[in-house]
Length: 145
Image 1 (cartoon, rainbow, N blue to C red):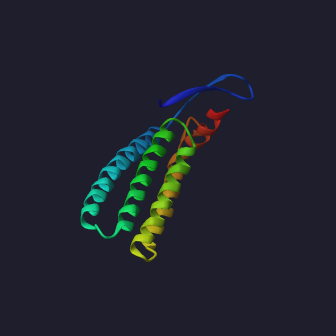
Image 2: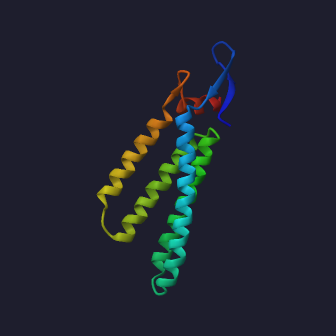
Image 3: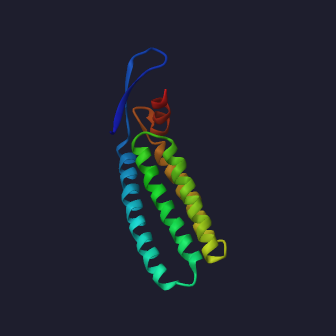
């Protein structure tokens, strides 16, 4: 599902909208990365559960991070299906995971916060790469109409 057809609101002609190849590559890379993140976080959760019998708060926090990883995967799938809400799902899940990391280590990790900001801006920039004069971000909006 790399493209779709829609009608022009001004002239009524059929327009073929497609994603730039790099956007599609980035989305699939995100799906692979999120899947690996889920596997790694579930492994950490299972091992943490064995090690921290008397500390359930670490287990609950790690479970919440697994849920955030699942939400990221869902967001990438939504973006592949031309749903703009997928971007907001990914940003929200990453922001929640950042907050959980702050809660787990007890301090504010500047590097993680800067990485979150730069990663979000980079991802938004990639979604704005144009193909045939229309960015993927704008094409998702045209699809709703």
